[in-house]
Length: 172
Image (cartoon, rainbow, N blue to C red; front, side, top):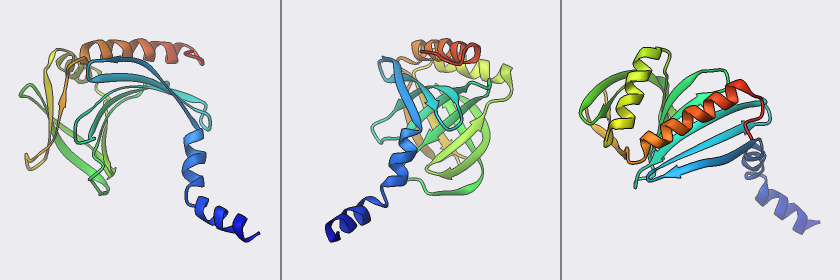
C-alpha cells in the first residue's frame, strides 16, 4: 500500500495535465519549410480550430488561429515570458512594414483577435509575401524574429482547413 501511495503522490501533479492533454486531438495537415498547419479538436467543447505557425530557434512561436465559429486570432508565445493578465500593445513588422497591435497578454503569450477583416486580409497578404516577422514591445524593444519561409503555402492550407471546419463538424 505504501508503494501505491508513493506512486500516486508522484503522479498527482501530472494527472491534470495528462487529462487536459487528452481533451485535445491535434493532427498535422502539412509542413512546409519553417511552417506547420494543424487542426485541433476539443472533446470538451466539441469544437475545432486550425493553426498555422512557425517556431524560431528560441522556442518562441508565432501562430495564426482560425476557429470553427469563424473567429481569427494571432498568438505569440515565449516560454521565458511571465506576463500578468492585462492588455498589451505590441508591434509586428513584416519586412519593415509596421503593424501596431493591441491585444492581451497572460503567462507566456500575447494574443490579438483579428476582427477587422480588411486589415486582417492585408496583414495576411504581407505575411504570405514576406521574408521575416519581427515582434517588438510598445517601447520598440525587439522580442522575437520569425521566418516567413513557407508561410504562403501554410496560410493557404490554413484557409482550406478553416473552410472545412466551418462547413462541417468533421474535417477528417
